[in-house]
Amino acid sequence: MGIQVGMVGVGSFAQCFIPLFKAHPLVDRVILCDLDAEKLKENSLRYGIPDASPSLDALCETDVDAVAIITQHWLHAPQAAQALKAGKHVYSAVPTGVTVAEIADLIKTVEVTGKVYMLGETSYYYPGVLYCRERFRQGAFGHIVYGEGEYYHDWDHGLYDVARWRGGDRWLELAGGPPMHYPTHSTSQIVSVTGAYMTHVSCQGFVDRADDGIYRAGANIWNNVFSNEAALFRMSDGSACRINEFRRIGNPGAVRMRLYGTEGSFEETSAGSVWVTKNYAETEQLDDLLACKGVSVRSAEAEGMGKVTSQDGTHRDVCPLHPVERLPKEFIGLPNGHCGSHQFLVDDFVRACAEGTLPPNDVWQAARYALPGIVAHESAVNGGILMEIPDFGAGPKAI
Ligand SMILES: NC(=O)c1ccc[n+]([C@@H]2O[C@H](COP(=O)([O-])OP(=O)(O)OC[C@H]3O[C@@H](n4cnc5c(N)ncnc54)[C@H](O)[C@@H]3O)[C@@H](O)[C@H]2O)c1
Image (tube, rainbow, N blue to C red; front, side, top):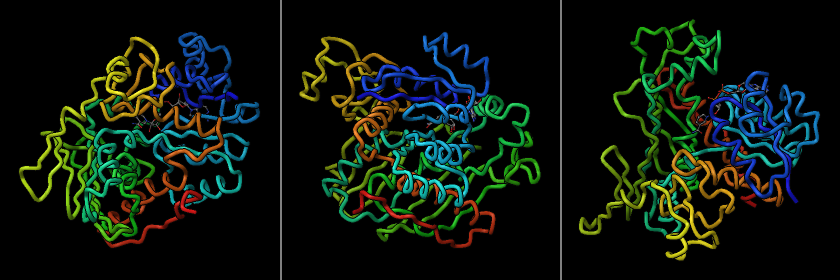
């Protein structure tokens, strides 16, 4: 049986997801929801979706089964808890939350309500992450000794516009959030591959030197002065992990990882990606395998990858490692994004709701992606002291 989904927030990023929820064969009806009536009207016309709701509060009063929260990044955890308490399943854009207390409350709410919660973490389906997950499953790394994850996004790459449309008149006050409050793209790359989680952290912050007034004491609600933060974590499997969240960086922009084991290692840099072992001759160049150029349905069939029956079309923005055969055929040719991840995330969530299963990136995993960053920032504010990171367990999948 299909489900009814309310899209909460029909701003910029929701444009990537409305068409996918609408096209999914297990979704019977989509309702658009935003505080901004103008945006609601525009999106209603753009996507031919007549049903609309003026706020999350109003949407919670309706009989939708699920909501997809794609609102400003500091709002997610309380909004997700509100929707869960109203009996809705929840898909949330990243990050999970921005305080330990609100994430603790979110987990408790999922446990009490028994509803599906899933974080739409795009890194989970990045090619390098898919590659490492498979190598890890095979045992090819040996014991993991060290990992690195990073998200580099300089303000000159569109962030001023993003801050203005998300923050409105208060944009400057809301723009200077601690970089480590948005850590999930980086942390999830390591945590979702090895299953180990961060237990302790020491973090250093770079005091910003730009003159745009964003990272200044008293200028933002977090009183944050750091534009870049670099954290070293102790992991539950005995390894170490370094996470960088940089917003002032001479770099074209990246979400990427490296992972080192006693037998083999994966290295992803601006120059490309390789698998290496102790034997230089075994080095594998991975750039072609990990390039998201799209996979045509015909070639996927020819390679025995899929059960898709259409005779033409392309799964857009995916690499040969993406398991496109599990996607609904209705997604063929539709927009995808963030290295092929959007379609998989929507499919994970809708199936979990419709079939009553636990999705990947559930609330316990989502907490393990976000909490390390929140505590890392506290460490940085305190000069890099070593701090313990709270853990709420792995949830029912651990049983
Ligand atoms: N790779 C990724 O995972 C990725 C990439 C881009 C954006 N994002 C996330 O997507 C989210 C949205 O970003 P955006 O740029 O689209 O923001 P946006 O400002 O364009 O859209 C947010 C919308 O939410 C609406 N909203 C807020 N509170 C609401 C409420 N109570 N009820 C109804 N509507 C409400 C706002 O009116 C606004 O239109 C952010 O949290 C961001 O972190 C993730």
